[in-house]
Image (tube, rainbow, N blue to C red):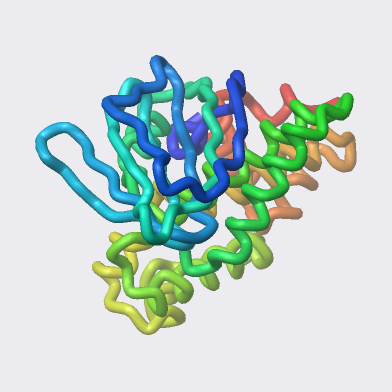
Length: 267
């Protein structure tokens, strides 16, 4: 159960509209607000100027992403000489826990990601799925919006972190996922990243929501849970399969992580 507290948990509960707005020099909105829904926008090309309450102003140009939270009042208008062309999606999210809600609230109103082509392709797919109205369109749209939200959460998570350091920690995370039978100390992982011990632990916790030890335990126990649930082995075999020789320690750790005993997952 400990590891569940570090996981974001949300789903797209409803979608009101997904539209493509062609360049229009006269386009504008004043004190607009989508009640109890989120708005995601993507600037394909052109420029626009936006303002929020408390005299917050910013310009939008190609590749920029807009994310207006629930009940956020905003005004905007196209640059008459270079009117913007954009996609907009209005939807609601079912947010399951306070940590996820906090993470959503930290997504900035205006952002840009390094891989603009990927995000543009994602939003374009969303619009095509919405206007296509096939039997599976709603499912597809929800899936694509979820992918967009994951991208925004990851971008927000990495904001202010040296890209080289962020990638080094991501590489270590991949190592831990692939080599879960081995036990790595935080000192060893910090050395692999080329970072100081204290900075590595801070960075790792920020990216994963867990300490390195907690993260390794979570991976091992979830792997063991899968083995037990699939009927592939007994408790002792599951413990050994994830690199834990002490069955009593394994059982205590399993109960700490999942809230249940290993035997309760045996088919």
